[in-house]
Length: 172
Image (cartoon, rainbow, N blue to C red):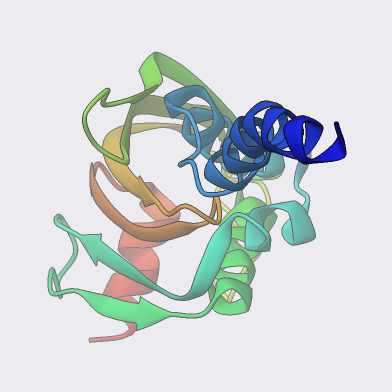
């Protein structure tokens, strides 16, 4: 009798075990990837440095198409968050919103967002005195979100604020 029960139990429990193992190796959903990008922009709106940094993989790759140096470069999450906070120090009332997205490709791990930022240049940052002028910029960014739900690469095409242009000119 016991010899007959063992194969039946194995037949019932083996698929359950295999299902649990297989589900442990499934990729994140497109919505989960989109939520990583939303969390990044939410961190910007909240001025939350740690939230911003936590969205990025170690040695993330950035490519700023509109920058003087449009090549790919590795940047660690803390440097990315610090740079973002310098921008927010210059534009303390900055708010990010979306024309489109974030939306993840259904056949890829790329999340696309067409965003815009509004606010004013009322804060001194990086030794540059504020002008009080309004700020309105926009861009489109592609974020490659890995299976650990971290941004490992992003490619941005954007316009620049007066503060960013002043900063770039001071570094020439």
